[in-house]
Image (tube, rainbow, N blue to C red; front, side):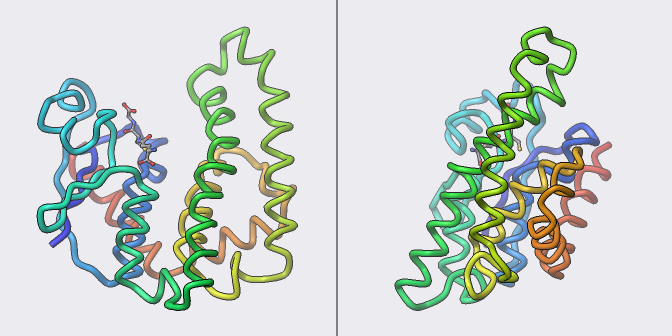
Length: 214
Ligand SMILES: N[C@@H](CCC(=O)N[C@@H](CS)C(=O)NCC(=O)O)C(=O)O
C-alpha cells in the first residue's frame, strides 16, 4: 500500500493548501487506499531519514513497494498511471493531460507562488510593496491566458484529468484573494473541480489529520 509522508501539523492557513492534498486527491480519484506517515515541521525535516525521501526536506513524498517518490506532480502522475479517471488511455490524451500537469506547476504555480509569498509572509516588507504590482500583473496575465485556453469547456481537455487536479490545486492557493472573481470561468472551473467527491474526501482527510495533531 502507498504510504504518504505529510506534516503532522501546519498552521491553520496552510492546512487546506498543503501540497499533500494533491496526492490525497489523486489517490481518492484513483480509488487507491493509502496510509499516512507524519513528520514534524522543524529539525525532523532535515533528518537523514526524511532527506532520503525528499531531498529538499519538504513534503509530500510517498513510498510504494520499494519506490520512494517526491514532488507532488510526479506523485500525482505516478498515481494517475493506475487510473483511467486521471489519465486517458489514448497516447494523445495522456500526453495532453501530462502537459497540463507541467503547465499547472511550471507556468501557473510559478506565477501564483510569488504573490502568495509576498502577501502571506512578507506583507510588511518595503521590498514587497515595491515588487507586488509587477508580480500581480504577471499572474493576472497568466490567469487570463489560462481562462482563454479553458474556453467554454468544463475541464482543460474534453474530460477531467490529472492536469485539472493539479491546475485546480494551484488555483486554490489564490483562495485568500478575490482575484478569481475577475476570471469567472476559472472560478467556475475551480468550483467544479472542488465539487468532486474525491476532492472533498481528500480535503476532509487532510484537515482531520492536522486537527488530530493540534
Ligand atoms: N515542489 C514541491 C514543493 C513541496 C512544498 O513546497 N512543500 C511545502 C508544504 S506545501 C513544504 O514542505 N514546506 C516546508 C518547507 O519548505 O520547509 C512539490 O510540489 O512537492
